[in-house]
Each structure stands twice: as structure tokens, then as C-alpha cells.
Image (cartoon, rainbow, N blue to C red; front, side, top):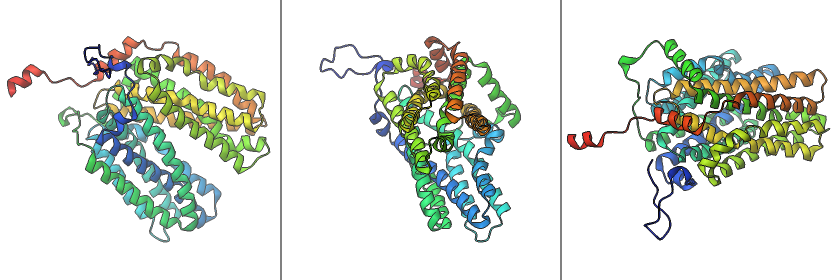
Length: 439
């Protein structure tokens, strides 16, 4: 492993191992490609959230149907029920940067179709589904591109920045979407299309083109390649364990935000109480991600992942005390902070996937994340609907979560296994002797 130059004035002092050096935000922002990637991702994320709000409002204003309005929002998750995995295999066939650009341009064009006045609602729903169907391909290509742009221990820091910036962009997208949609939903959609276009332009101008690692003559049927990706995810112990940990964590962490409206009613509050629970959860997640990845050295960060996986269920268990509002806010903050391990988990996952396989693996993992979150929120909401007070439902879910995380992490791979998986997935380095001979 390469050595970093010592920052000490004594140049003869031994250099610190790379894994012990804490990468800084400057390591990411100082990389033109990484900074451009982050800017494009923020534009695309804000655009996706603005689109959800604007479309929901547009459907409501045209139909006065709460069911159709809710369906227009929920349909954005439908592609993760199988289509996402197929798209992941297709993404791996092409340059990831090109897929990102194409996805943004496709979404811009599809959003522009919604600007047609008087579009029938069934046609509008088809367009909305098409926009949503592009998202899994974009997400897979985005994760794969970031792993090419930023490598080594700087990758978890870059992921933390992207996740945090995405959270802020989503909040801005929701808020601006609500304000603009209330004024004129068509104006909101026009701005949305412009944001997708600007995101594509940023990637095109500032992110380097890297060809696909998959050669055309080696391609098989897309279903076969999809199955091969799912098989790798299932049989590779590092990939499987990390993915299951992420799914379990998100199934737990999504609950306070997902049942915030029910918890607010239980406390005798309204939309302000609901908003407070959701806002502090999101803000704490952003702070936790940035602090954990920036100020904890990589080797310690990796050792802390397994014990910190139990933080979320332990926080949820405290809901059994039926706390007042300030206690619920503290639970939301604790849950947000507990997701800080998502950046190193994502970094490990990205580094352990061979180039040319990231599209389908990431799509499968993202699909699992969406389904686990949705299933957890739906299950907790269903039990609460039966008359069980929300705090007890959440607390019991935390107790079950302790068992889930114990099962998921009981065979956690060793540091040597993770290093071996990263080394096996890394592209081969060029032979300096052969290169010199060619020169």
C-alpha cells in the first residue's frame, strides 16, 4: 500500500499508512471531477424531489382525488420491484458517465411532456412512471461513477458528502416544489426539466469519460447477466453481509420519519409536530454522516461499524417509555445519527464490487433498501392502525431490530476478508516493465 508524505517538518519521519490518514473534505472538493459530480447529483436529486411534489399537486388540482395524488407519489417506488435489477444489467454494458447523462436528459424530456396542457391523467401517470423508471438506472450509474472518480479511503468521505448533500437537496426540492407548485405547477415542472438538463451538462463537461469494462462480445442475455449479479451478491460474503446490514439499518431508521404523522397525533400535535420529527431526523443524519467519516480515522471507523449497527434498534426501544415531544425529538435525532455508518458501508460495498458489475449489484442493493423501508413503515403503520399506541409499536420494532442486527452481523467479515475482497475487485494495475518496454 502506498505511503503518504508526513506533514511533520522532519522529512525523514516515517509516513503514516494511508488507511490511518483521515481523508478531508478538501480531498474531495479538490478533485474537479468529484466536485462536479457532487454539484450534478445535487441538481438531479433536488429535481427528482421537486418533480414528485409538482406532479402530485398537478394530479390533485386536475382530479381533486387524494387517491390519485397519492398514487402519483407512490408510483416513483414501483420500478424497484424488479425493473431496477434488469436496468442494472443494462447499465453495466455502457460507460457509467454516459448512462448518467442519458438518464438526466431522458427525465428532462419526459418532464417536458407534462407541460402539455390538458394531458389526460392516465397518460400523465404513464409519463410519471417512465420518469421514475429512469431513477434506478441513474442511481446505479451514479454510484459506479463515484467509485471510479474517487478511490481509496477518500471514497467514504465522498459518499458521506453526496448523501448529506442529497439530503439537503431533497429538503430544498420538497420545499421549493411545494411553493412553486402552489403558484403554478407548470412553472415548477419547467424548472425541474431545466435542473435535469443542467445536471447532464455538468457531468458531460467536467466528468471524464471512462469506457465500460464489459466487452460487447462477452455479453449474454440481460436476464442471465441480471441473475449473475444477484448470484454474486448472494455468494460473496462481504457483499452479502454489508448489504443485509444496510437493509436492516434502513428498515429501522425509516420508521420514526415514516410514522411521524401518527406519532404527532398520539402527542396531540399536528403538522408542525410531524415536521419537527422529520426535520430533526434528516438534519441529524447529515451531521452524523459528515462527522463520522471526516473525524474518525478509517481503521477505527471500520471497527465501529458492527457495534454501531445496534444503535438504531436501541434508540427505538426507548419509545416503550412513551416519551413526550422532546423525547420523541431525541429519538429522531438518535436515529439520524445512527445512520452515520451508511457512508463506510456504502464505501466498502462499492470497493468490493468489480468494475463492470456495479450497475446490477447496486441496483439490487438499492431495490432491497427501498423495499425494506417501505415494508417496515407499512408494517408499523398497520399495527398502529389496529389500535396499538405508536410508541409501543416503535419500541417493539426496536426489540425485533436487535435480533435482526444480531443475525445480520454475527458472521461479520474480518478486516483481512474485506481487504481481500477489495483487492479482488480492484482493476489490475498496469505492468510498469511492459509499459516502459512499449514506450
